[in-house]
Image 1: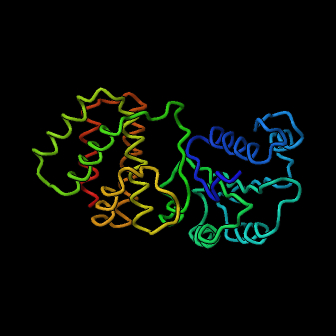
Image 2: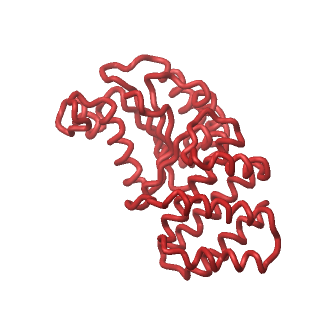
Image 3: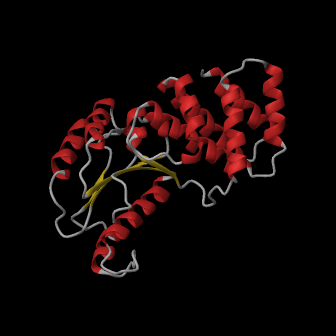
Length: 267
């Protein structure tokens, strides 16, 4: 499966993220052409957590420790035992100690072609920026995915870029009004904003991971030149906070105001 990345961050509840991680492992190792079939020997073993090439790593005493990551690093260099691709699924990955994350980073920077690391997390801000930038981030906390037009994405990116360049309250209010009057769902817009800042982080850290919003690379480059890595991570946190507010059916005007003010304040 050449289209499967060497590293992912799956966001959502433990159940949601784990389900998607197993599905990805089944897809890579399925014995049927219609992967994942769910019925072959490999798919069944993965589903039942007994496949030798799908390794689950859980926190020990509330943390994933550097010793666990060192063991992963030693094992990841070995070829798959019976499957096509090895998977290392880190449950509650945000509980990794800083030392464990830095140790894992070396593997993410120089990945092995037959292995994939999947970080399951409900709290991306606990992961260090360089780890995030070297993973493909997928959010499974909602089923509906963004279908925003190119023009809409371009305009929203321009609004965000303008926000980090101005401190004028009246301009922020005008932009809040524009966002509130858009026909698109607030959740879709926020999902796009999160993907945009993730791309900015990739650009800022010179990661080799593919950019999601390739058609916005010029704007992404401008963001990266203006924001520090810390500011980008804080911006992601602001966007996730407002996404949670949307899902709780918060006031739309207040959500956009809090978003833009929050993004302006982290600069």
